[in-house]
Image (cartoon, rainbow, N blue to C red; front, top):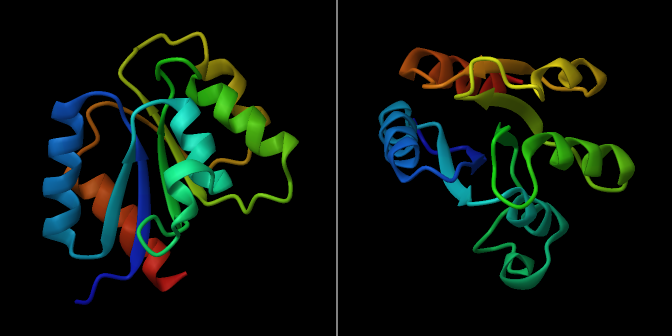
Length: 135
C-alpha cells in the first residue's frame, strides 16, 4: 500500500521515536515527522521557520501528541490550537507515560480523537492510521 498520510509525532524520547518509526514503516500508511517539544509542534503547525517548507514538512493529517513535552506541554499545544481557529486541527491523539498525569483531567475540554498511555502498541497506531486513510 502506498504511503498516504502525513503524521506528526510530538515526542521527546528517542526510544519512543524509534518504536513509532518501526510501527509506521511496518503499517506502510504514513510519512512520519517529529517535533521534540510543544513549542516545535506549534512552529510546525504554523509553518514557521524551517517548517515553512511544506514540501519537506507537509501539514499533518494526524498528530500524536505526548502530554509531557519540554518547554510547552501537550495541553498547552491543545489550548493554542483552540485559540487559533485559523489553524486546521489535524486528527489529534494524545498520550502520556505518566500514569496519573495532572494534565489528563483537562483533556475533555479539547476535541481529541483518543487518549492512550505509553507505550503505544503497534495495533493501536495501525488502527488509527488505517481509520484515517479511509476517512
